[in-house]
Amino acid sequence: MHRRHPEIDPQLLSETDEQRQLRTVLRDFYTEAGGPEGVRKHLTTPRGYDEALWMRLAGEIGVHGLAVPEEYGGSGFTFAELAVVLEEAGRALYCAPLLPTVALAAPALLHSGDRTACERYLPRIADGTLTATVAGFDADGPGDSHVTAEQGASGWVLRGQADFVLDGAGADLILVRARTPAGPRLFACEPTPEACRRTPRRVLDETRRQALVEFRGAPAITVGTTEGTEDIVSATLDTGRAALAAEQVGGSGHALDATVEFAAQRHQFGRPIGSFQAVKHRLADVLVSLEAARSASSYASACAAVRSPRLPVAACAAAVVCSETFRLATAEYVQLHGGIGFTWEHPAHLYVRRARTSEVLFGTTDRHRVRLAELIGLAVRPAA
Image (cartoon, rainbow, N blue to C red; front, side, top):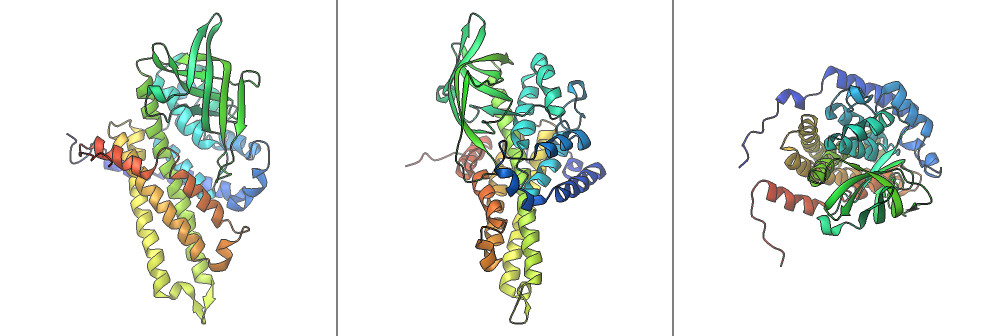
């Protein structure tokens, strides 16, 4: 039975001076880089993002290595600092593979406890020279994995496919959950064109690329142990949900701020539309929802920062609250901008697309509610 009051230091839920300074630096940085308006010009490039900006984030600010221990080339901070980065990235609709690289692949390596793999890959993740992602992590059980691993004369090789892999077409490293005769195992694969076919998928949110990855005898090395694989996958996904929640809070904050600013400037019947009670009520609803999402995200980030056993509960709750808030905020972003909000030229639709895809990225809200009920000991009635 869970304690009524989770054992999390309340100070972890408040932003520190360092985190505030990091937020200010990042917001200025993204503004200089063009913000949401600058996203479009990079969507047609081969990698889909500004690679020079990616290296600047790693080199000038040290974003990629924030939550990486110093022994592996990082700064030795915690997930709480990384959550600030992700929130500002969500606010600016940053389209580089930050989520799969620093919030999925890097934590997976750390959760594995495999020093050899960490020493091999984490320094390159921290300095921005290696992009990474995960594949096969979203399966419900070992039998649902479509990737198998075989041990040949020269080592392990992967066969099979994983679909809708984040940054699957461009990532330099893929951490794959694959089936072996002894059970599921985690593998690290540096894909090559000869052994790995990667086909970009057409997705609703073009700022978050996904791909079908087909392994055709791709060489791979083991990461961690067979016995610990499912724990690694579960912990990684919960960390990813906390990271995504922070992104959603940032995107919701942008949507609300932009809508409030427009409502103060747009005049109708000789007065700002923001002065009408109906508009005030709708904006107030978004604000209340945003504050709830911010609280849920902060708690999940605090749990991830200290690797609390409450992270699964916190991550599921944050996934539900932040997904619903992002959906509401982006809907009002479009509606309260009137005719211009529906146009292709306005950035609102980019945030709507991000909101719709984010809410199903690591499972639907219904799936999270069911898991949350199971985690806290509530009986779940079978579906009719």
